[in-house]
Image 1 (cartoon, rainbow, N blue to C red):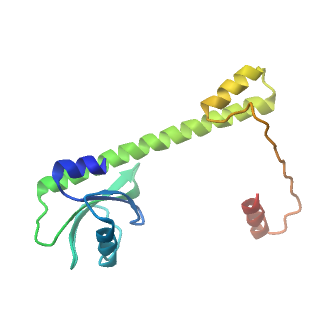
Image 2 (image 1 turned 60 degrees about the horizontal axis):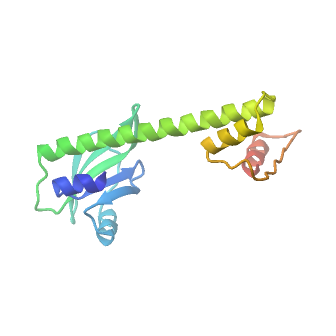
Image 3 (image 1 turned 30 degrees about the vertical axis):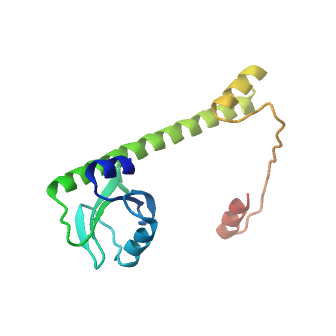
Length: 172
């Protein structure tokens, strides 16, 4: 998506996570990207803003999903080039597309996890699943169940403090 937007607008585009780590970019060389981060004061933005530094001008807009800030889309320009209202509208639409893309990815992940959970529950509860059904359902979630697997069951008791409990869960 970053490449398509850059090819159409001829404006370098940067997509970052909420901590300003680059996710995707186009029209920016890697050494230039490093320079951009060296000269920038990073803060949270809740609306479209224009940030001017010694080395560049950035128009940044937030990416929201269900009222949660997920990241930022930015157009990057050299100091002398002005970004227009049309650029702002395009950038805000790019942020909307990013939000929809992330929503789709989130929904796909949650659906896969639900399927895995239901499948495991069916196996554990002893529901009448044939070997073929188990192998077929395993292939739907990218698990080859025709190969041998080992399962470990851990049981713990007599946890003294919440810290011990957290430590034990991290080890598991």
